[in-house]
Amino acid sequence: MLDQYLSWYDMALKALKYKIENFTTKPFSKIAICGMGGSGIVGDYLRVLASDRLNYPVTVIKDFNIPKWVDKETLVIGISYSGRTMETVSAVEKALRRGALIAVIASGGKLINLAKVKGLMYVKVDSGYVPRTSLPLLLYSALKIMKELNADIVSEPEIQESIDILKNYRSYLNYSLSLSSVIKDNVPIVITDPRYEPLCLRFKNEFNENSKIIAKCEIYPEWSHNDIVGYEGGVRNVKVILANPNDGSLYQKVFEGFMVPYLTSLGYEVCEVKLQGKCMLAKLIYGSLIAGLTSVLLAQRKGVDPLETRSIKLYKEYIKRVSTQFFTQH
Image 1 (cartoon, rainbow, N blue to C red):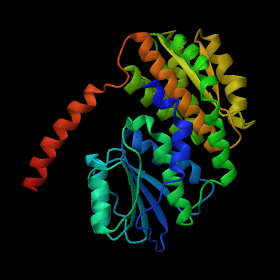
Image 2: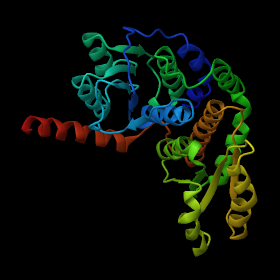
Image 3: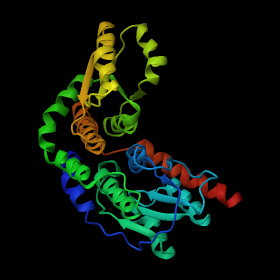
Image 4: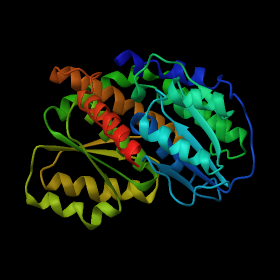
């Protein structure tokens, strides 16, 4: 599985060459991105990237249902690597009935079939990967769709910088190995600022799925109004991972000037992951790769299979059975 993360550079280049099938457009005043898990995180990334670039809202939907405001003036992007994610398919079908402008990104499955039958925009990505390792395929495809629809949230130089970050993937292995050795059997608590909240979530999810451990995600400044007090109860089996934006911001000043020394004074070990790159996209990509590599290396250290997600399989079998009964009755 490690080799899939180490092929992100090639994935990114490949995604930039994908063709948008059935391209069409019409005016829209808001964007809703539907997706779950390793596909849904792409929507979270798009949301923060758009926060200071677009004058209308970008919302992420991780559910079977869609909000009432999704209508004919909404761009809906459905993202499911397999194309079979029940929640995403359901949300896209409901958006279609409301007349939304729809684009889907998948490697196949029901979503691609729906797009072909209904004449919806779609990008078909390469199959053969695990959804959570296919981040570059999905993310760069989504950025391409948004650009073509005049909802551009990153510039060409920013895309190039993010891809250049991926060129150095092998140099990140030793750092990730060191980080995994620090975590060991502890619970990682990942902290960052609101701009990188999706990256914090990505770290947590990677530890959950690949390393088979519980992890926690906290966001400053909200962290300083509640979670901070929990550390007063004495040192526990946790390790703090600080995703430092490394950009000279107030957030960085607080992290380095207060958070690190304060937690250290209480006896906690803080591991700072200083995000590399100048633009937000590059920092997100860098942090995501570190999260993936670290979680897989931690899984190897623990002797668990990073690929297997037995619990998710059990859930999908159950929800498929139950939802079929539910929709038959309703």
